[in-house]
Length: 260
Image (cartoon, rainbow, N blue to C red; front, side, top):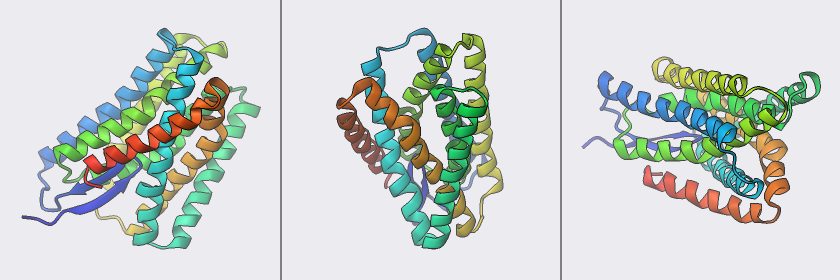
């Protein structure tokens, strides 16, 4: 039996079979996860636009998603990058990702008139592109259980964030059609990033993958501090702390399901 090899992404650890390189199998697994990535964002956006939840429930779910991301960036992005590359490369990637996200978030809010919904959209795009590039690589040889774990983690993190972001963008005065189109476009970009990672980054050096992973981690950390946790606390006050812990536990459970 072929020895399993671990690949880390922002959504969980995939234990892959290096010899299982059938093009049809790899592409099928990639398309399944791509469908979940795009579907979670579009379903979340539709949820926020047409069936919005109460503020406390929404805040609880956003905090839960934040807890899942908090665990993921540490265990699935930063730690493996330090182990396989170096501390300095990982630190540089994290700081670059945080800096680019913070600048983009400032531009969206201060120069483009965007509210917190636009900030969440920027957060998902900036951390999602490098995450999905790495995700495409990780899916090479992944089995059904690993794919199921990844799909669950993606739904857990993206669905409530898209719902909250779309609702906020709607409250800023944008039409439902325009908001949904923006989120659908983001879903398409992230899906293409996953496919590109699968097709183009196979065999890439660990140093390059460390930069990609840690750039994503930095953008996630900045978005949690600036967008996610402040919104969750405003809407669900002290229950947000409990929700964050639940999200972290769920993310750990999903990572364990995938073999991590």
